[in-house]
Amino acid sequence: MRHVAIVGSGPAGYYTAEALQKAEDIAIDVIDRLPVPYGLIRTGVAPDHQSIKAVSRRYEGVALADNVRFVGHVSVGTDVSIDELAELYDAVVLATGAPHDRPLDIPGADLPGVIGSAAFVGWYNGHPDFAGLDPLLDAPGVAVIGNGNVALDVARILAKTPAEFTGSDIVAHARAALAASAVREIHILGRRGPHQIAMTPKELGELGHLERAGPRVDPTDLPDEGADAMLEPGMRKSVTHLRSFAANPVAKPVTIDFDFFAMPIAIEGDGRVQRVIIERTRLDADLRSRGTGETYAIEAGLVVSCIGYQTPAIPGVPYEHGRGRFASDEGRILPGLYAVGWARRGPSGTIGTNKPDGARIAELVLEDIGRGAGKTGRAGLDALLASRTVTPVTFRDWRRIEAAEVAAALDGNPREKFTSVEAMLAAIGR
Ligand code: NAP
Image (cartoon, rainbow, N blue to C red; front, side, top):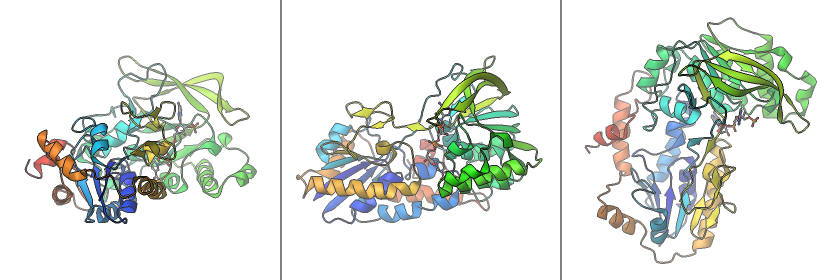
């Protein structure tokens, strides 16, 4: 028998398990520090994007296979170390994602009211680490830094009316806070131009269909239309949306302004954020942003920086500090230790990108471990955890938690999530 431990139960973890699970004589443990599975699907994908979240049904199919086991509420690094897992399993695959925000390295970034997207997204999605965030929503202005899909998610969630959350699984504390929010002017700050955005067309197009909010683009920021022909088709569609926003400004109570060529250089305020100082930029020959020396300020009571994520380092595991991911050769970190998904390639790509990634890592693992080295695998892990009085949450336990969440849902919504580990455990009588 071959034994594989996958650390992390998000898309990368389950796509790897899906590919491995088809092999013979293999037992796979998917370990997660939370009592609930699916990682980014549960706490990263926007709550009003239920069709994307539906992929969890596929992971459920994998989790229910005979040779796959969910080991929830077990923290690697605290309850069991990587070295111990390496002793117990033929292969250990780190599918830990990139849950930390890349730091916003400008003066004032430590003022109250400046938060990263991991925290803000975690807050409205009910991640236990961020349920107590209480973002400052008491001023009209908000600055959303970054020109990627996460910036779009954040702006859209800030802009929606309570009725527009029907059918979503946004958590109660976020629903209530957003319903009482004073936010009216949302600025999406991009340090480069409309041709350099990292926003996909479907997500960008959604901003044009919001009930009380309308996007605004300054037509003078757009390059000549002829230049769009050089763009790849998806990007061209995104830019077409920007052109349409520029050509058809709508008067709605909430504005979402695209501020291009706008590099935040400082955040100021008396005891909390009050304004963002921005330097205008231009593009150099390599399409990098360069400051022009011209500055202006926007009023903002909240700054959400959506500038990418990092994988937390693990002592003893080779790590690429500049790129915020594990150092690996196509996923092989050290003999018996692998990385997959964002932990391997950094925070890019869609959920689906993890499917071929998981399949490739599964291939490498199977190639490397042969018929297995007679390790104890899950029996060894169970004995070790029992000796530490750590009781894992099983997949069956999770389904009871899930049933309680579904039963608590408001009319029209799929679930009302538990937002603390204690509440999740209480649902299974612990
Ligand atoms: P991203 O796509 O890498 O975008 C990051 C943005 O931050 C870029 O516009 C980047 O600008 C900007 N940035 C980086 N450092 C900055 C700085 N110091 N100052 C100002 N701006 C800075 O990252 P993301 O939005 O976090 O998304 C992560 C991944 O998840 C992406 O692959 C995304 O497509 C995916 N995602 C998909 C969906 C969806 O499909 N619905 C939803 C959410 C996320 P430069 O280009 O100038 O570096």
